[in-house]
Length: 552
Image (tube, rainbow, N blue to C red; front, side):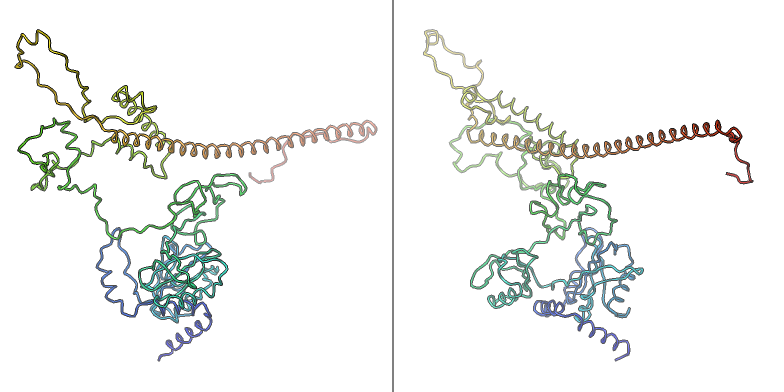
């Protein structure tokens, strides 16, 4: 063994001795849960997968230990060169530059990941507490990532149970499961458990009780210091400006009254609150697949084509046609042989009023106030138009029975024909024969709209009214926030004007005092001169002082 290798081994042994119980805890976790086989095939398979957005660095070996460093104090690790950052980390643990360990920087979460194949060197990285850059020490918080072949679950346990007894009890009560770690999250009743494998069990046994176990979901990291998503405020590299952590207002006093605004969803609640519906991370697909609406299917009947043809005349029942025969308009169209044919593509410019209403109601969180007002006006006009059409198409008997408009008859269904009462034949009818050749063909009686269709359309109108009310409430809240900010600005301007007026009053009093003193001094000089005429009082000379060669 060479001298450098001996020094490396000695430093590693010293770091392990200084690690303590924290090193043994993560060592036991990886010893129980890490995979036994090699990961060379897995890495080769990952390299063949195409990247979705931008080129990614090559994957780190699955068998390595990953230590994550969170550098606090405002040090932006994304602006440092990776080689410089690696030298700082190796210098902190006392390892040489020739160490084979790799380092990666996450620009989103502002964390540093160190990958090593040695458990002893992982202990050294795990024990880092400070990093010095340009002579300034920065606090570092470290933790060891879970093994690759592991998953995390959670269940609830009262606070009466001791934290140090949770892991041994779980391992004793669940011998069929490989449990690597278990700890309580802060001072809550939630217990985080690390299992071996990729599936979290539905139930877990604890002291003879079967408890429900659910997968542990990561929360979206949001910074209340710079109002950005992706990292927390303890590792934020931005300058400490005076920003309210509730509403995000700059240059505001700490005791001002404001309405909280969430950084994640923009709602009226505190960031990372349980009321936030977007506080959990969502899994993004690795490969982009086309949406069903973008790829037209030749096996699916088009609704727009049936609407373009307009209402078709019904056909009478034929004796030759069996009961199981299907009309032609319900048959699926055959697959087109021309790949460039656009006859089966739906017209994107023709949409129904229900699709327009649903698209108008699905507003994004960061929409501007002008767009909200425009959408609200368009929805009101659409509702008014539907109500007028409903009143014009509904019979008078239905209007008298229902206190509010229930539905309207679709435009494609023709109006119902009222039945006519046959009159008794007259003498003229019996004596004179009818000429049926000149009479128009009799219209067939068509089925009126069913009550079920009317109820469904009424529910649609009520749903639109509810959405409009919700939109109006949201607009009023936006206006309230704007008014509060305007009142805050006006109060600050009023305070500045009051301070300026106070300063002007003090200046006026000072000038009055100076004038009074000058008058008293002048009177005193006049009195002294009158009593002693021999005293010569120097007269004021308005001439400027002599120039000694100094230029301004």
